[in-house]
Image (cartoon, rainbow, N blue to C red; front, side, top):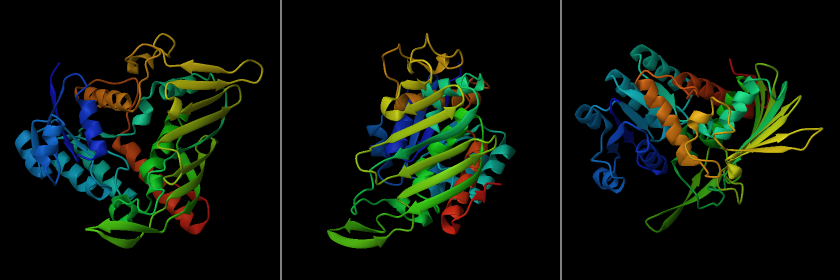
Length: 367
């Protein structure tokens, strides 16, 4: 197996998660970390050989096979474009950009380069979700009626909670919807096999002013993005969906859940019971399908590493996603499709239209 070189740009929580997951992918070496502050120290803390303050310098010196963009949304486009121009494959954190126009430019550059491009929608790589996707494809649930759920956190539920995402100039017109809602929307499309075609949304900015402390002084900062998002969706094949996304939902640290209503069997997955797929029936007892390689769909089994009863969670989904992506760099094809820049652009179109709907109070077509 040819060894491939990876570099991670951005060393926050998600950048560190990328580094740790990449170290578990066979045949991949993490050769560099990029951060604008204390890059070498942060690289050493993550056991990465080299640290750089400038991603351009890193690319010139290290020539990685693939970079991972784990920086604020307003930097994604320029980094991706530079990488493609220099013949380097790209993995980008979600949301792909600040808006669909930026994402379109990124996709066009990716297509022109012919290089591998991916967005880290890792929820696709939990075995329960892949199992659900295969069951729906095989017709085991019958006709799909609806898909419902949400993504809930409490990380910004106090006035003193603040970061760059709250200002639209950094993250784009939506915050909660793009930061965590995009994960759920991609998951709903992935398991059902159908794309969102129309949206209707209502936003709440529950805490419109945040208290930011700097050098001992407290400053009021006005927030121009939503704390909570309520969304209805119409899918291409007639499925109706609804979801709530919130970062002010007390007591929920990081819960993603999805419920699929169908003619024969219903299905539920909840990240707080990450290994279980719940199946519901009218005329027989309900079932819980717990992650186990011997019980999984043949296409799902390859993304299960540990025996039944041994939980595979957030870091493992990253590992499986990156394994598929680096396999693609080697010319391999995974049974479980990772999200590409084409998927990322579609998500940006959906997010832009959700914002439009929240502002206009009407249903909006994605195309």
